[in-house]
Image 1: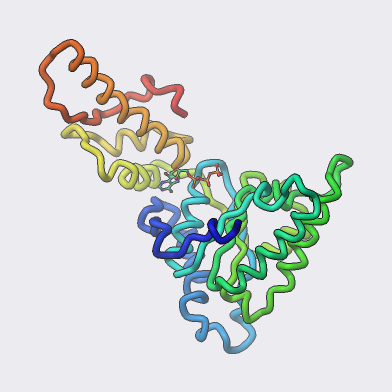
Image 2: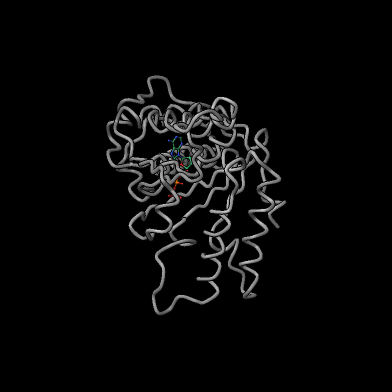
Length: 269
Ligand code: ATP
């Protein structure tokens, strides 16, 4: 079942340019992942430039961690596998360990590869708890062991990239294996502007549409919030056009996105 989940780099369809803002994050990922995967020979000398086996992206929901992970695989020319807790913990106990081993042995054949563990806290969250199932505990231990077992030759070309909104739920054993932790922050006005330009790049906007005004009005919005807001706003002119059609009123058949007033869209955030 992993075979169908693997996306080759030329089929991912997201590049760094599709990720608005987050310039520092992209720069860090370039040094930590893209260069070593693209030019491993430059990192095979000496002791200082050690390959990084694990990176954690953490930050509020909807800030583009998944988008970044996909774009990173494209830029690094790496295959991409996305897993979550439910990929590995099947209801047939015992399978989870086997699946975990299969994942890692499969990954070494696919290198360069990025294994994206979304909601890493739910797959590899804090240990213990009276209610933790034995099977979950074994799967987690197997995961850690397989991860540790990546040969250093492979580790340059196999990256575990975890993402979480709840970094404090991760236990020390996981944190230690994700030595590089990168904060993916909510965008400020300047960065919201960059994200909006990407989200609205292909839209029909009314003349005089002000990106600045929208960016300034959306304090606290994540990239995902901005996307949802724009989807809701793009739907309005379609609805209006349909109403005009049913009334038999004149229309030019092209929905145009007008400057949006946030008060009209409170429920979209
Ligand atoms: P979660 O923590 O809830 O899983 P996330 O941090 O992984 O969220 P994404 O799923 O990557 O966030 O973001 C959802 C969608 O929001 C993206 O597919 C994209 O359309 C939009 N988006 C978020 N951040 C950005 C960004 N920086 N640039 C462009 N689009 C963005």
